[in-house]
Image 1 (cartoon, rainbow, N blue to C red):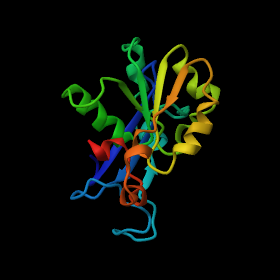
Image 2 (image 1 turned 30 degrees about the vertical axis):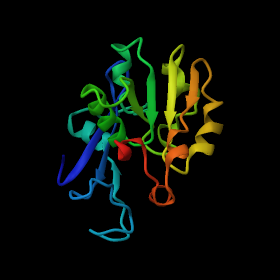
Image 3 (image 1 turned 90 degrees about the horizontal axis):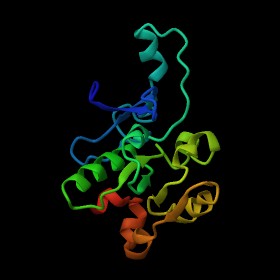
Image 4 (image 1 turned 90 degrees about the vertical axis):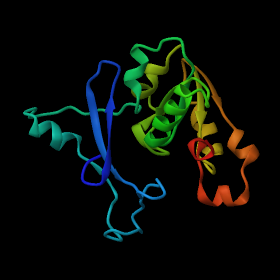
Length: 182
């Protein structure tokens, strides 16, 4: 945590810092604060601060490129099924739940947003080559992620419909994700 916010670091398989993302969360609900919520209603609640942090560390021209959140795990976890969610928080929670034995034991990654990390571009998804991948879209994003899954060549991809099959209308309105159910 940093100044009441959560900082997520994106690190690639070579253990290079790729980005730092500061996100504000409601400490009571654990839900991310959106632009239309307090504090500072109307102002952004997500800040990309990787370049400024690296410059403060003496790296004058940091070269940040997109990668999956949690990608650093791929260098040591070669045989596991990869589970990809939208939110960094979801990847962290599902990893914790898996270690507690109450969720599938996958290597959890995140795109960092529905369109985050430019995850359908070859330079980002090439780390998935030869792997089994299950995409876990948030409620309401199944069709879009199903379409995007066709871009992920070189790996075996399944898009989980478990949320779509079991969600209530209220769940859909809230846009819940897999971690919300756990």
